[in-house]
Length: 211
Image (cartoon, rainbow, N blue to C red; front, side, top):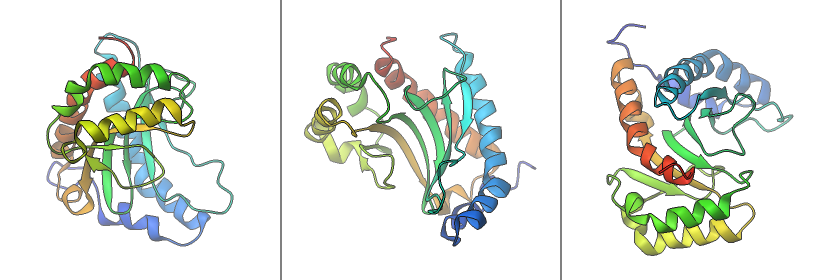
């Protein structure tokens, strides 16, 4: 792939409109998963190089699906070879409308109460992220709210829910529209991703109690 070609293509996003599980999975495996594998290797290595533990990439396989095709897909990077869902982790992924780069605490995590308390005690780190950063409480939905729009009251509501609701989640990061993503060269996208992860690392450290 040359540096002048875009990394993401329109069909990487429109594949989420293909009918049928088998057809959509075939397009995902052909078009997108090789890119997820590449990104997973690059950014697992960069995260490992921080020296606070080795990270491993996990490309979503959607293996439990038998009828409904996936509406999004991702690669996760976590400090465990065996899995990532119970751990705070980084994700790079796609919906049909946009790309996301996030730190995720999803419902399988056993330490959601402790994570919420640490984030409450360090709200300023979240509220001073750049204006392009967004928050969500549900990884199954494509929408997210800008941190600036949510403000302290909205953030507190999300963190209270994280402590009290079993299915509650906490996702923070950046969204990139399909149109903007497909304009970026490979180098531009790698730089954008690295910048995003660098800005999310202090939040990840708070979440993992490593600050």
